[in-house]
Amino acid sequence: MSQLFQRGPSANVALLALAILQLSGCGSPEDRARGYYEHGVQLAEQHDYARAGLQLRNALRVKKDMLPAWRSLAQIRKAPRIGAALMQSLRAIADLDPSDLETRLKLGKLLLPGRVSRSSPQAR
Image (spheres, rainbow, N blue to C red):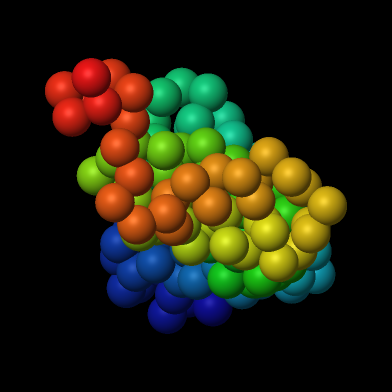
């Protein structure tokens, strides 16, 4: 034990961090996924969408069928620059909840080839 304190404070901090990491990995997959999901929702409420998306994707890595995480991720991915990611989220929601008509309609609109919006000059 005396050797531990002779290594210096940075070694002690590293060992403490390692012990904390080992203890935090003991929760069930559902608990870990719920923790990632709740943190992602908090970040999304703070408009930190990049970090929120990361936390929600972490939740889905742990529990692939977590429907609330897929729904939250789809909300974050609504921006046009991440359309492919939005499609992935909408497809997962439609697979997990076939009765969700709103999601199926959104997915259908995205999949329609050559659709023209009413606000575009071509539609006038």
